[in-house]
Image (tube, rainbow, N blue to C red; front, side):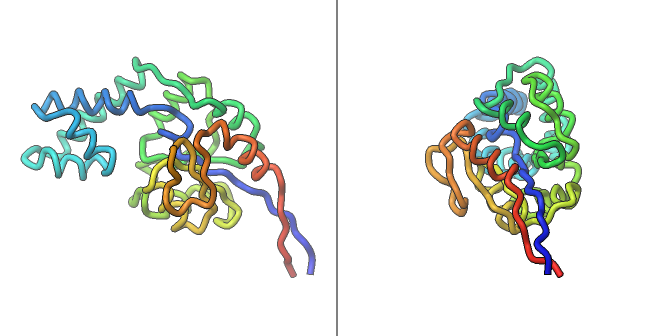
Length: 218
């Protein structure tokens, strides 16, 4: 038997975890709702809990869902080009401090928008981004996080998931990973550790990623 050292990996959600996009999302959904003569606040409350196609089914059941999605995508792409974005405090220090190849992004958004937002906020982009187009099942399914681990060559048990939302937490837990919650005043059910802010979590995430651990091997 030998003791073999393995690396550790960190998998990040994006919106609400690394990028503060709440005002942008509210504005996009508000503009979308106005186009269809709907109440912006009511639409946004539904959108917070569901994926876009499910939102359309609830708030605009008489409309063509593909048309609704095309309109939403158009607004989101324009927001990436012209909207104001901010990274959460500590995000740049954290991502620049992680070992290359040790982290990935797992998002329900699309890669081109993530890249646009990271470019706008000066955050580094990793080699692995699992977006909505990369999987057939989104969060809370474990598939997105398992896909990211596979692309990194990592075992699920060696991965730490950083999330801010219940669906993402369920996704990480279902994948058999350690899950820490950030940017919430109250801990999301199921998380292994809770931090009120990303800034508070930074030293702990860096410590996790840079301290290899061993396992017994024949």
